[in-house]
Length: 219
Image: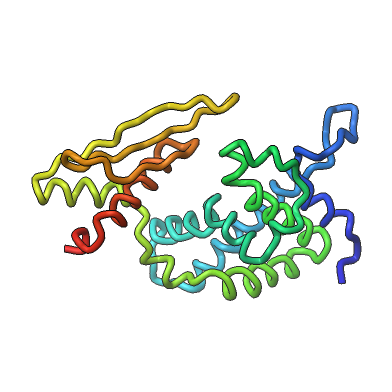
């Protein structure tokens, strides 16, 4: 049982519903705990991979860790463990694409920060390894998961004498900017995706193009 629920309650409170608690402007949101959990998660994942793959080089370990702790991966992981069902947030926050892509993953990191404060380093480490890495993440499968869809698509187009273009449209979104990417393959519009990161939108659009073209890209 947790020794105190206060840290966990704060970990599950998004800044959109937080209150100012200090003259400095500090709020009782989960952002400080997110900082703590992020550092803990990166350290434990790094050690886990270092021990699991004793003969892999730094580049391999760094790339695999990045896949595990990416914002998209953490968001999906938070949903898998149903953390999204208990996070406090203003539903209007989901209208912002940046928050929609990160709100639950950030809460997961904050939750880990709360576990660290409550159960200490060893308790938090056990939770990350036993409940996240070994139960919800297939690390061996993840290492062969393709992420550079844009590079593969360009390579495929070159081999088959096809023209591929990534058409960019910038869409204002409050203080942010959304990049809408449409892949033109030959004379056809194929995959389309939107994201606040141009690179991420390109990869997502390229992946959708792969899916739309099906087995042709397996050659």
